[in-house]
Image (tube, rainbow, N blue to C red; front, side, top):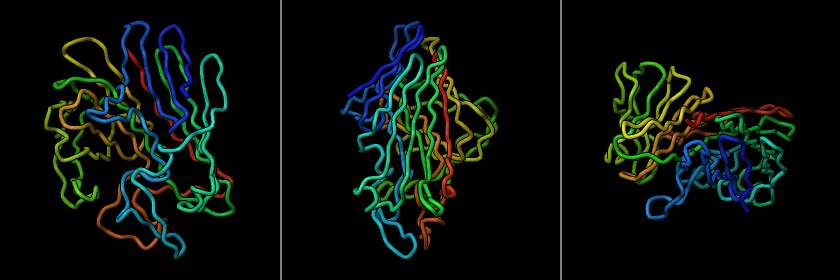
Length: 284
């Protein structure tokens, strides 16, 4: 089921399966900004990545001496969420542990996601609640896809010098090699070949925002990264969308870790505490 909220500027839809955005529609421009999931390219739209981002080595991890299997990007995006309700400006969804999740991720948790409209701004807040008596380890990532065309640009607030970590196209793991992306520059141009080697995985970003702009029209999306330590940028090569993905976590490298607590980018959440990650997008 899809739930909607709207104001004078925007109307958004979120479906219960995966708690996934399905529409970000501007009433001002009479324009849909969110990718509509054409399966000819990619059927996703804005999956939530939890409790891992990316892929594990052999899709497995060890925790306290026991081995578990976990699919790429975790299970949240392939699970029905509970719709907690809506008011005039926001709606909230919750995901909690089940027998199925406990078999592959042995923690009791709530993930509460709130979508809020504030004028022409969409705010998405994620709270991970640790309901255990011990530390819980988790990653979380956003993956919204916005309509764009080849030649459109992603523009950082500040000049950046960044490299992307190269990805093994078969195993989806980070490799030791890096590829320069920006050298004291602000603009990443969306070309038909930019994602031939999979996503750009960037870290060490100084800018708070990245803005999707086009020379063909004046519509834009100013995307706040929420201080996430990693940023993924991805699309199927040549596809008419781009995913702007702030990640509080990252896919494994070839360096195998003895325990899940040592995973690159993992977050330790103390017993009874809540971990928050919030991003927002200004739709213009």
